[in-house]
Image (cartoon, helix red, strand yellow):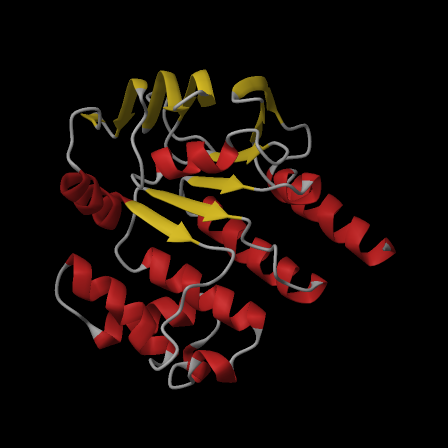
Length: 242
């Protein structure tokens, strides 16, 4: 559901070099506001490196990255951290919740590093992912799917320009995988820009567009024929037949 022809993210001919290893080579892509993009590729293809650069966790060795009109090329690590907190909502496969904080407090931690904490707003974020009744539970008292939904609420609390998810269903069973994908569909239908890094063709089918990396290069960049609601229906039908 792209909303504009302008790009919220521009990656222009970037490379990432570690000594003799070229993790990324001359990669270029644009992401429009409101677009849902999937990034795929085998192990060693460069997708994690690309995700880290998009998420302001790293910088390219060569090339340019522009986020919502702001060039990231010359920013320091501290400046990149600020941009990440303000503009990127990160969802991790391993959850990274603080074990001694409740679900509500884990969401509020993201507020703390961004601005002022607001318990009411954090509770509303949990409600968006169907977890308001689990707000006072510690991570060990939550299922894997519930922990991932806390991660989504935490990622959304500061109203990011891009929601960046790394294998968001990788540790989930089928029921919770469907639940997480339904949440992403809802966010996308509300105009959210989503980038999902995944090894799963089924998860990628939900996106409007799939970029496949191979040996640090863009192997293909294609529109998905079963994007959006059709992708969700196809995914759920395949899951029911499995």
